[in-house]
Image 1 (cartoon, helix red, strand yellow):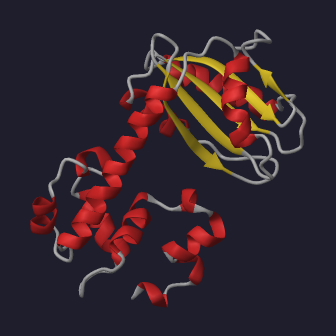
Image 2 (cartoon, one colour):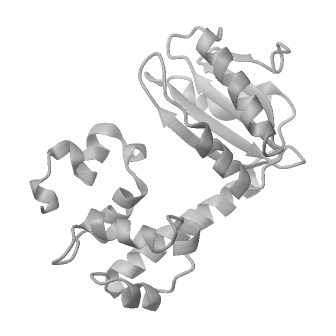
Image 3 (cartoon, one colour):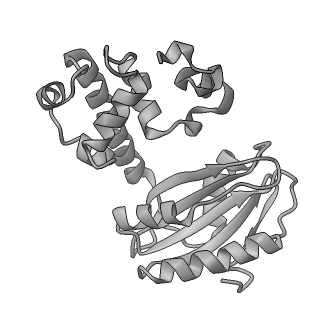
Length: 226
């Protein structure tokens, strides 16, 4: 079935408009880049093939040259391969640029000041993780999930995978409360305990869990709850 025959909510571009770019899978992001598939596969199917051939790793995919991509994947010509390579290079340069500007975390207030402009006034909940090295310098940050007005689902495996990939010594988990109430829920407490135990298995410390609101925040570390 051609992508144009899919339900509108399942088409990558339409999904971006209705749900935001974060809602797209890795394959759908690549499908937007390449624009079209081949006579044998849709753009999304072709993107899945590309990812599968790189062990579902953007890092591995970025190691392929334009010539290697065109030779390896039917339906990927020079223009599409160059587009993919350019997008991956932008990601690398953005990461490098951010790393130069990021600071060492000395307190929960540092984290709040860093994330408050990003999260505080959202009408929905989002969950972010900061990954820190041994000097408490942020080496990577990621939005883990985006939910509704009162909750968002979080996959601990994604957090741990990134911690291993970026060789993080510690992580700080953060989410917002659109209601403005900074107090943690029982579910927040339970997740914090579960996250701490899971991270301990790979020798990574959960340094803090912040609940961020527009005019204040709650820090598990400050309250001695982590």
